[in-house]
Length: 186
Image (cartoon, rainbow, N blue to C red; front, side, top):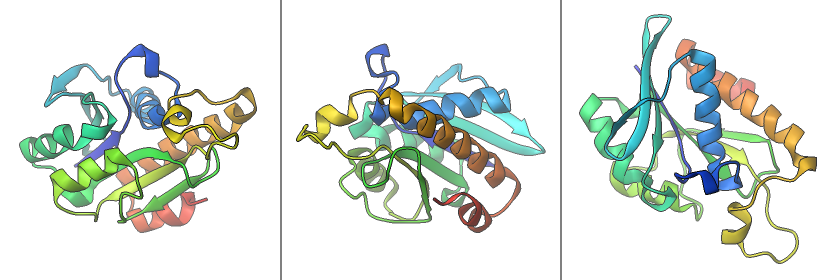
């Protein structure tokens, strides 16, 4: 059993923003695996399917970023999904746009969605794909920056990062996360 979670904010006004890159990865993974996101439970939009004999869940919490754990904790409990079978994808200010940093654990690093997950799961030890969105360079406040869209100059790197994130998730269905990290970090 595998669970792939993308963090973001619900609503069309947030589509394509830096903070919603987790949602974009899950949407692309949904298309790639042919697992439509059509069901709702615990304030989340999800889909489930079977990939090479493995049950796969895709989840987008609709609680708004800062309350993501309110969806994820109950969802994992209800479906009895072990923590070691979950990966969360989210935006990372400390990484250049489109680059990936895969980790097995870590602090929230100021990311409120991850803070909420840690609070509801009771641990920092869960697999993650930190998707680089960069930092503002023009004194723009971080909350404004993460709710803006990527520039045209960044779009090629972002598309490449989405593709690599999807491939990393697909690889985790077949192999260990250590092997996935070795192949997709950077």
